[in-house]
Length: 206
Image 1 (tube, rainbow, N blue to C red):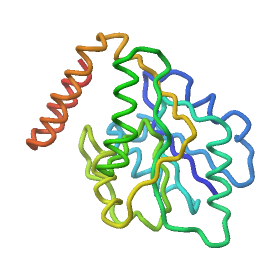
Image 2 (cartoon, rainbow, N blue to C red):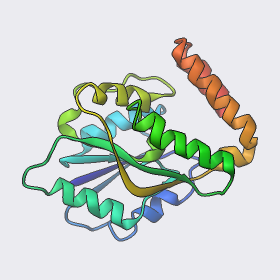
Image 3 (cartoon, rainbow, N blue to C red):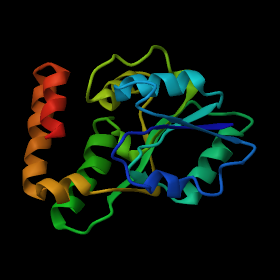
């Protein structure tokens, strides 16, 4: 079985819902939306979703990302394999808007951060063999996907599947591409310096 966990929030659009069309009653798929009513922190919603899941393969589906049917079909086949290889990773990141800076961000995220550094952000839609899960995520406000990647890459390196993960560029449109890009770098620096995650999240929300 493939378990699809979606840490929903109050501001998501319908991209994840488009991904799941046709899979609602699939016998080898369970869909587990975890809302803010169950937990306020996304890390906690991911923890809850994992412990509710039953599948051999778990997909953490970002609420603002769309995956094509072929991507989910591939994970279903993977979960039903007779000899499931322990693996994890994400899908090829793309934005739903065209701009040279957005294309660069996606390129960096795919081929530098994921392939060379072993860090997979949630908007790649992280999938993993449940045997990799050894302990729950810390309850921090932001960068829980980095923490998850750091845990998994100690065991095996992530793979980049070539199906597109098409992510909403709403924050870049709202705040401006250059401004949002600079803010993202400030947040990463703050994470590296071990600044409180609540402070980093408040900056991110602005």
